[in-house]
Image 1 (cartoon, one colour):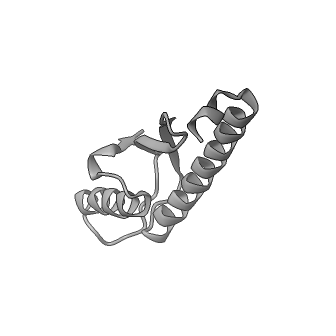
Image 2: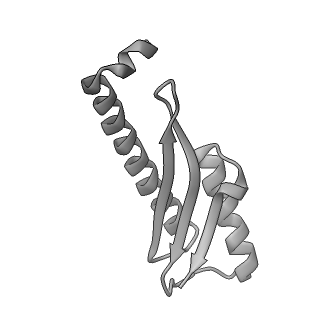
Length: 102
């Protein structure tokens, strides 16, 4: 019930579960990246809790740190593949998947 969100114990439990869910998704995203040949990448999912206590993803930040891309595909194709695979997995728009190269 929405009124339960006013209870700090209930709200804190929801936050804890949301963080666990996001950490799980970040780990799975790293696995997906490895499967397409991306090594040494960080995945940070920014999210917020809705008024109903649900998780809503705001942004999926992928940081490629001198990453080794083990693939015969063109760089631009790899970037698009990252966006497609992660947006499909997380059920978010491709525009929410942002890639930074360092």
